[in-house]
Image (cartoon, one colour):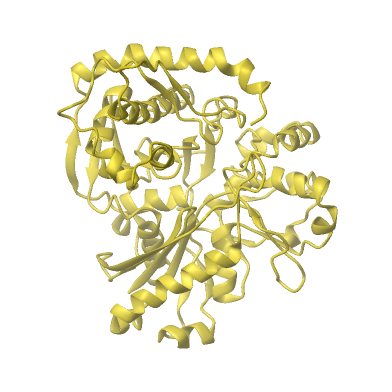
Length: 491
């Protein structure tokens, strides 16, 4: 048996799988985000740990015999978050998250200090990444900065609580701006620019390598062996890719979670930072990947449920299906609720409904949200194409993939076939469990992470393409017209 745990933004998910990676049980514990100031986004790491324990406790209640057979645990998690510990290994302040936008000035400072930063890291410095957060702490909270003993990513803090050890993996560490991504090692130059050293970083492992052992007290709590090992694990997107077999050149997926990701595997380090394409190490040795990232995807529907007075995002989603799409809907939605990354790198961008009339309905608004997120992925696809990446088919995963209309709109907006695959809704936790399996058994990655069965294929619909493509150009024009307003408006 193997456990996969995803330390997400909206919740911690744990899944239990058998020796063939079949799902045995799962549990999700929700989390909340704190936004104490404009642009800020934080969480308390202790909340992650409590949620992780609760998730495993619930699975143990239902599967006591199965959980006793766990051989290894894999961790995935939200990327970029900054968890800082003092010499007593106590958390110094709340973790600053991936969708926090306070560090725009620190990004400029970092790239000025290291002119070849983009060549080393493969990425443009953006507020969501970890390194600018530490520069911000150094400038605005010097007392806290002076106490730093270790800097950890969210899943690696949970690993520390599980094992007492400090490890990270290549894929998650790629999002710190401290990794030499081509050579898969910490960059002393990038660390020095933040007044940090390798001694303050965790040791690096590949995602499928062993990285820690469960402590005896926790083994006793869950009735597990004291020899349970931890895999290096992965950032959430790389773990999701392992779960659905997106490993090789051009194998691609779109994840519709809180944020949105257009992910494509590559066989070499191939950066394109000027278009805000992320070039990261994959969770598997000697592989890399590129990503276009949008900061708000399914979270747009959740926010709309609040301001439209709906009971839930599911209630809103039911207003739109393939039989009642309004192909004359004039409303255009810009999904920049938390700023935007690919391709704009604009933390000051915000969400917009454009084209409202007296005849606009709630269904029109919901449809425009689904379309706006699809348009954002079209922008990601354009940026990836400039980086030399193309995919014939795209797998669709994440919570938003349960909405079939969204898949049809994305297929038409991108003019790509969309594939729904077995286990595609399990997300990063499933890939983390597969990494745990590889770490424990040494099985070949191509066997463990083989492409899953295709359950459904969505072909781009001609009527939808005819309707959406002119609207996509208007969408892009609206953003361009608003750029100066965004930059001069307090967010």
